Length: 303
Image (cartoon, rainbow, N blue to C red; front, side):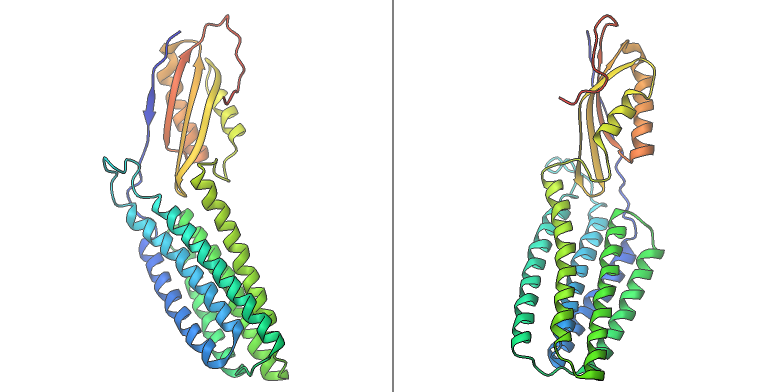
């Protein structure tokens, strides 16, 4: 029985949608500041809550933009996988800050229920209306720009913030027409729940990256079965591991039992093409092991 070690990878060194992301970041961050000022001036907690959500969007867009810049930096002897994992660290900080924002919104909403304060409905409607336009513009920029996982995730954040702008706009309209002040803390709580939901989802993704779990969009069993059946002469696939260094850099390693080592170059090429084309996995380490036909092996084994 013999074995050899094959390692291949492709690094994508160009950022995708970098200029679009920075433009979207600038617009979102600028208007978040406007909403904070307008929220304190008008007395609207819903507007302040929407501003908090826009700041969370700014963090998300900043992460995506930073990733597009860091993708240009080559790996070094010290950081052999490059700098993509900075995204994970910043994402964790982002989540923790958003939990603080949600807690602040909840406390303020409770105080507003007990002691309602005046809200300038007209000012809220004006600022929230402009915010809605800004969010639509940012969503359009991200949708029409070059697409990757970062820009798609950022687009989801912005679409979520559209709901926050609609909620703040509705709050201003109800207060202007009816004078019913409780609508402001009620809608601010809804915005807080929206932020909390997004933050929990981001926390799960971040922890999965930290723990080097299998990416959510990849099924380990499916990949193993596809590899085991991709070419004649493959006896089994075992010690299969799939993990991500960052949200865009997925890696795979496995041992492949085959009938004859002389068939390995052709098998290796087919497996590489399968993993790249079907699962977008380009950093692959495969170790072939020749197993006599007389030896029975399990087709798929992961330990």
